[in-house]
Length: 128
Image 1 (cartoon, one colour):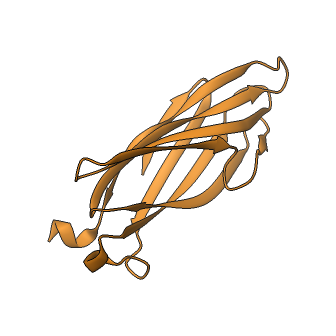
Image 2 (cartoon, one colour):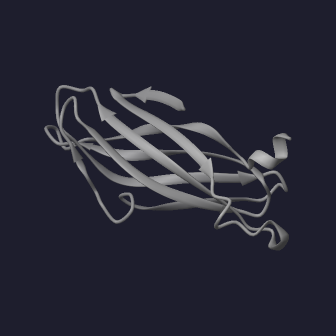
């Protein structure tokens, strides 16, 4: 599990290769990831948007951005956590992701970035 704390917000990531949904013979490798976002500030925050940078071992890369996560813009009170699951498709069995969230301080209405730790996406059969 990868972890990074920015501006009083801890982001933890755990990823897995999804063999049952992947089609290696067609160049489709599916990975899931679980995200935990913990607010250790003394004020509530709201996750406004996200931006992901996705890379694969063939040199391809793309960016994903949008409002919230999985259709939600959760409010996370102090010392509380928000969890969600999502996934990514690559054209190779090895890749990497990183990114950030834009958060809103609910007391001051100021926005700030919270960085998502970089993590590797590796299909287990590559390591054998």
